[in-house]
Image 1 (cartoon, rainbow, N blue to C red):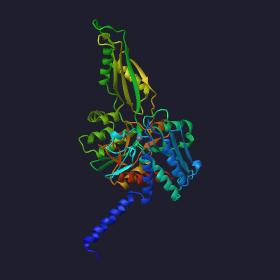
Image 2 (image 1 turned 120 degrees about the horizontal axis):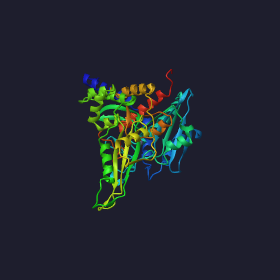
Image 3 (image 1 turned 45 degrees about the vertical axis):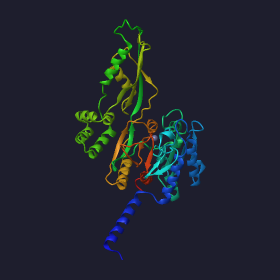
Image 4 (image 1 turned 90 degrees about the vertical axis):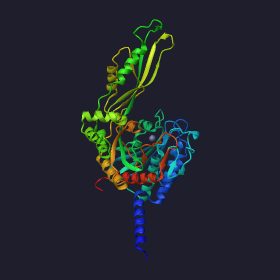
Length: 467
Ligand SMILES: [Zn+2]
């Protein structure tokens, strides 16, 4: 016998139960993802001091235990301690493969900087703590756990599903796994497109704001400006002074802004932001999406992030000059760091810099080799699936296409002709992003929801639409 109140609370419990059951995978699958995640986080794969090979080997042995054949698993890389793992899950072959990418290495973390041991996987207050819990071992563990589950179910996709866990994303360098695979074993990872880190869910005060889908990145170009001068005694100054030439050039640079503009990605971003934002810029954000120059001016002035979304930027970051307190300088030099829109070329940026500097005493030299990559096209299958699933998991939360200012391994894939999209389904407080910092963590519920979201997303994208 139930009293009415008891019945309604029972119904509430049942509804609550079924709602939460929908947004996470069954217990056994959560457990497997957890186990792999813990194992990965506790491997010291720090970019400079660690090794990625134990991560690759741990994943390989899990896959073999789950019945993947040796011929579908590759472990190897630039040097013995920086191995990558690539595994292929076979399909009917009706469509080109999809590549699921995550990196194995992490930013260094020191025990004394943290309140917990960064290489212990610690559960506390609803979070998992540890270096790599958000960047990028959660996604790495989930790709592997979900692939094992597809196999268990006997899932037959129409495109091969390739998972690649790669070395040295943090800082790039000579052992970068994506670069190495593209150069040496492109056959293993060749795909119609790839999913990767770089996009995540944004939360503010516990409220989910947006699920960001990263479709392009700015790329980095560094320049060194140098002025040489014969110098002399400082008691006999002349107007032709190396420091003054450089200072003048930097002053002109500080007053210069590259043209404001949008592309397909940033225009879609501002369109979505105009729906979410309730601040004074709401109307301007919509007008930016329609290419209004006045609205772009106001929006760029309102926020450094919006400014950086609307234009290429170049900023002085380092300075040197002079050799004695009582001598005229023989050298003055500055480093200028540019973050370039995908559609702007390196040559355009360099020639614009020269024009702005407008002083032939100041030489402009390119530092390093930039890695420009085009934006990935906004694929309708991916956009539709992301939108539908985001709305299913987190009703009312929009999918926002993004161009990020930072860089991921997606840039290597894009410039090699493999479009790449950052999407995870993990939600992070936008004012408390701890990746690369101390006490990095991941909400436990968020991890499980990300697992379920990616499980369904990959399934949908790997069966042809007629199915
Ligand atoms: Zn990362």
